[in-house]
Length: 124
Image 1 (spheres, one colour):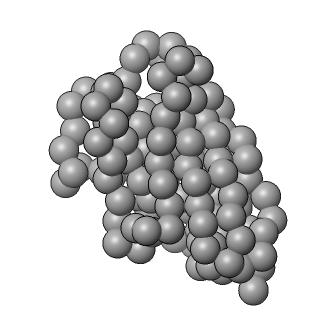
Image 2 (cartoon, helix red, strand yellow):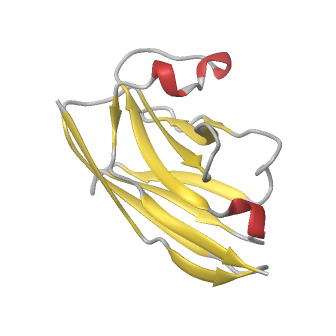
Image 3 (cartoon, helix red, strand yellow):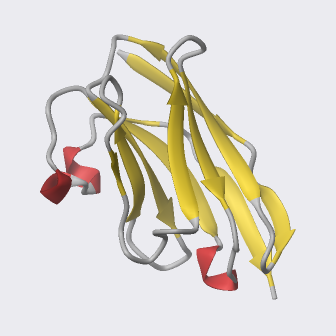
């Protein structure tokens, strides 16, 4: 079992920044990622990281604006979001993948555990 608890969401103006955190407990995961879901839309991959190596993965929509990182000592996953846009508004989830994953497989159906989500709202 893996338990994931997100925090750090909130309301921010366009162009602002937010840092999301995800407290991780339970069995070790090979990789962890952030996904988001806007109203009426499917889950969208935002960022991923291989926990041991630190390799990171981003879609073009957030590359150069979002940074995923982890603290191995505190077992915490982070998502630094800069230059936020109204279209970044969504519920953000952290997710864990127990086994090996490649860059082509960052889809919700390949994640094993999910947090409860944290709301991010970007006003224009």
